[in-house]
Image (cartoon, rainbow, N blue to C red):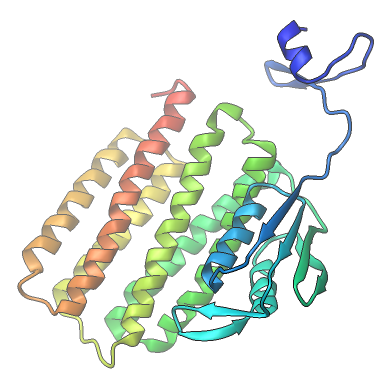
Length: 303
């Protein structure tokens, strides 16, 4: 064994190490027993959203127990401008975290523990599910705006939460175990986290539309949204079946979408401009994801 590596991991002469065969590689595991990873969070002075993000981040980082402390029993929900119960906020977020449960709570304390743990082998199937849900939520937004369907718009929030749950689980798996092909872990993490951003944008657009008393989108607005939706579908196809032509097609469609938006600005309402501008951000994230997918292909030496 390399001396520097042995010293770093506290390997002593005569100790047994686990040797595993993984394809063309031999993996030497120096794990001497499972160590429970704990994280302490002090939520004093935070609003509802900040609390949610702190708990979610600790889960995604792979902690096994999260000790949450707070001084007050309520906190401010800034978006709706009202006080909400901190315990209720924590229960709501934990319900979105696969394998997590609140196992102990008092007036100013909450212990979140993992009652089950997954395997990185689940990653690919869950990622595919995320992509399917992304297709659905994107398509629902386009249809709801076109048909002024408020009921369908209201379902987008729930679908967003479902995707966020699976995204958090995938990021947790990557942080705890790494990707099946370790050199691609960082790229896969970036891809999953970027999908999270796309779904957030779709959620915010749906909220903005719901706040309007009435929206009668112009024909050109609906056409642009449908065209942008096709860009999302194109990326998903590219992810699972990499072809250079698909990259060229995506870039052409992305540029065409931007030109259509620019040419329509003087012919649509302010509300429609805002919707298209927000959805244009999705195109830029997708373009970044195309580059990430190219990186994965480059790693496999097939480009």
